[in-house]
Structure formats: structure tokens, C-alpha cells
Amino acid sequence: MLSNFLPFVYGLSVFVLLILAARVMMNGFLSAQPSNTKNSFSEARRDDRTGLVTIHPELLNKDGCITDEDLLTVRFSKDTDPPQSFEKPSE
Image (cartoon, rainbow, N blue to C red; front, side, top):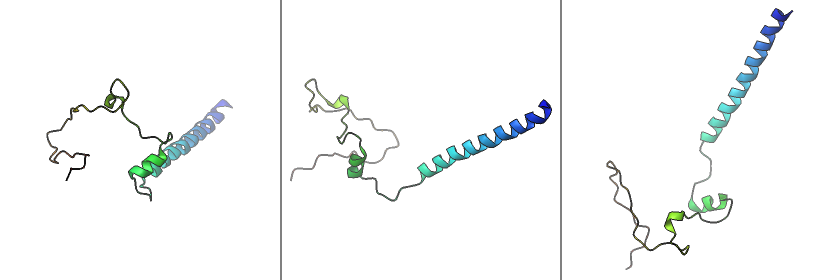
């Protein structure tokens, strides 16, 4: 009796595992697809759950304001683009 029941349980478990694996792979494929909307800063702000722009704590001074100090930047050896400044030039 048990020898007839074990192949059925084995087949059922393999079938369930295949369905679960297909579901996980389908979620991965769907998340890798590019969406129809553009990823811009304004859209990123709308998707933010707090509605606020996130500021790293390293940029804040002891009073909680954004620091005016020069910050250390790191450039890698194969990086050929010149550094970009976010400040607008004064003309």
C-alpha cells in the first residue's frame, strides 16, 4: 500500500515545486522589464513613501544643517568623465 502511495506524493511535490519555481521566475522576469514611464527625479520623489528628499547623515553638521565643508570624492582609475559640479556657474 505504501509503495503505491509514495510515487504519488513524490509526483505531487515535484509538480508543486515546479509551479512555485515558475512563479518566482515570472516575478523576476516581470520586474526586469522596463516600465513605460521615465525614471526622473520628480517621479522618484512621488514614489518616496515619506514625500521628502532623503539626505545622508554624513552631509549634516552638528546642528542638523547641510554642511558647507569640502567633501572628499573618490574617482576610479577607468573613470574618464570629468567631475561634474551641481552648482550653477555664476555669470
